[in-house]
Image (cartoon, rainbow, N blue to C red):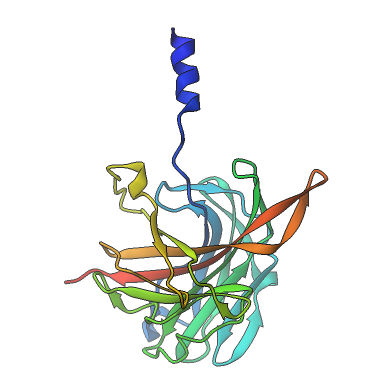
Length: 250
């Protein structure tokens, strides 16, 4: 009887588990007192459930500020997040303004979904009281371009972004939203772990988080190319990920 019941459980549909590229600065707004550099963590994980997946050395990590790009890939230092390989970097802050930190990962093979995952992930922070450049499009293969400034937000503020692939809006793109659950929030249902929004005909989506902290937005589209796995061509899930911080209302 126990074996029959166990077999029955295996046949039940399991909730989808969202993957997120992760670019987490130590703070979303840097003051003069914070110094001239910023520690940033790069990982691949499930933010709400707080468990990780191995992140291979990123193909590229880039800093964008004031119209210039700086390659930070060679500055990465190995670390672990939830006992899985991850990386850190110390990002230099040379002037006031908005700094975008972007990670292009190696393709991640996900056997449960029979697909490769490539999440182009970015986070934008404000330095020294200036927000110039927060809405800059970086030209990533797939990208969420913020319409709402992605830092200096109160909880209850709505966040809006435009999903783009190849520089063009992606109408109807699925956007998954998860909370970086450092407060050990318990979801009353597995369906509450990952929120889902569909972008409109212009690629625009809107979401209002219910609480403060870091929230990840992952816009998912299918790549127009495949990658080989054991001699078979497999589809590639492209993720345009942005992390946004919301401050607690006093």
